[in-house]
Length: 417
Image 1 (spheres, helix red, strand yellow):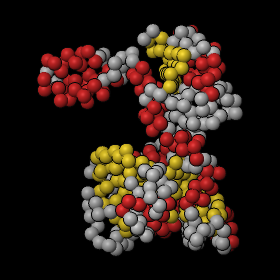
Image 2 (cartoon, helix red, strand yellow):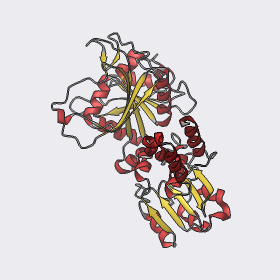
Image 3 (spheres, helix red, strand yellow):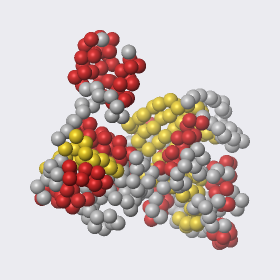
Image 4 (cartoon, helix red, strand yellow):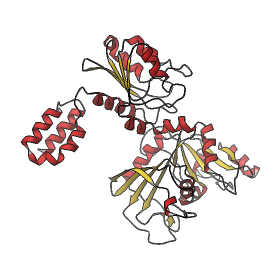
């Protein structure tokens, strides 16, 4: 029976099978064994026609644009009139219409007197490639707009809501704001700080090692985890490694298992040790490769790398190192909004100690390398106090094949390291 109920819920979420809160409650009354599962089941079944139901629909639509909308946010929109969904749409890619436009076009004349649900404040400015959505909403006859959150872009930030209110449209803000903020964490950081969102990814053994003493690391994680790494790369604008990873693994850092846009590849290489026959160099004309080196770098290697199609960027040293805050500022100037770091222990350690990481994704393999000479996932100088240790919040744990995947956001209120 539980399997049948699971199918019913799954089918309903696809719009194939109707099941309401009332029906679910009656089912739990008839079958006491379901009582302890009732809370979980309620979270899966949303009352058809509720504001929450339609906002969740808008958020799911927005997710379809993942990896293609940068530097814009992911946005979805649905139009509902008299309890019937009459239009839906999402932002497919930067430069294409925002979510509200295809949703209103699908609704047509039915938009008059309807409610529009969207996970982000409708835009109202003209400093972009597409017209302001607020005007299309007003002209359509929409009478109510429910938005999950205010747009952090200072060109919009409350002005879109004000424009709609001035036109006599009822505006409600804040429904499922946490979910909407999590969806567009990259965009929110870009708008608030002007810096890329940084995801730190690593695969390690149960004893915290990423490679053997000789540097062998293929493969620490299983195929399921490696396929997800392709998805992470496709969602990011850029992927970054240190010179140690280049010399040890000679990686391509390109998509292997899925189709999509390859991210730009960045190498931190203070002394220009990147070989001219490295894969990241020989493929630089087809997938952009950028080497970040110091302003004191010798001119000859730079000329040879540029001749191979590599872009070389000079970063000023501070206290004998290339500081990550400066690197992130340089990446931002190059249009990077989301950076995926796949470095070794040295890069991981510097990044975590610098406080520049926003999200961590670690894949833990159920094996041991059993020795201090094996390469550690985080190396370098340890933090001096336990309370100064970088810590995660919003932790998510799930199994991926034989591996365990741990994801979390870095707490920003840390003691000085």
